[in-house]
Image (tube, rainbow over all chains, first blue to last red; front, side, top):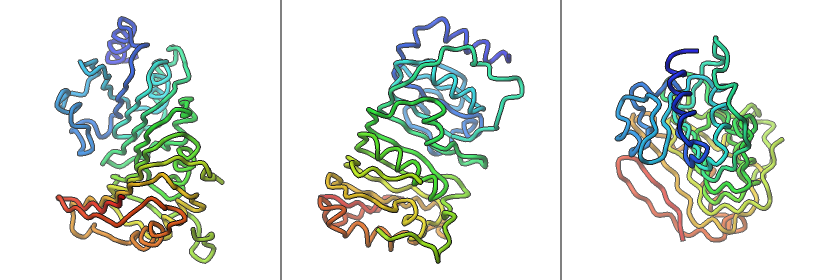
Length: 193
Length: 93
């Protein structure tokens, strides 16, 4: 386990983070120089130093390079209902194993879910997969803001949010690869709405 | 197949910012089978165009057609256009 995670887990263990209402997670990609999609208040508080920090807005800002670890960390906060993932690009599985595997796993009830992509190249986190992997309860979801990369993913996200009580839905794409058409050929287009 | 719920209680829809082109086909596939959204009173389309060549209205055909459908968006009114560095095309009551 790296020193950075030892320190991080030490701080988590020494604080009452089970009551944390908001989490902001960053992946290693895209957080080094504050991508333009950074939230203003957090950026001002954190500057360019994105080490794990629990600041006065009761929000953790943590660099998370691996999806697997991110999911484990998310699930350790049972009362978290606002989740913000910035720069959602991951590097696959960690070489040394999931350092957060020992944390308790809860099912979170999310009201506000926001995921943004990174401006760097990489793989976007699939929102619908994240909801499933992190066991996020969306029964009380009020707002979803996310970046997607294809019509297929957009549809999956829309389907997920349409089954929730969410009143606000924003779909964006800040990835250089951008929105891509789906796999459906033009000549087999489905019924127009 | 992921189906959009017929009981979607959406009130506000925002498309973008988008840095690359999307065309009618993209949104037809994404929102195929879109149910009526009687409570949607605000739709915002954001074109964030850091590069002139990235500016694209390829998706406009789709939204122009769909947002005009009163059976799908009965609460939507006329578009309000705001230009402030990026282009916001905002539909509201």
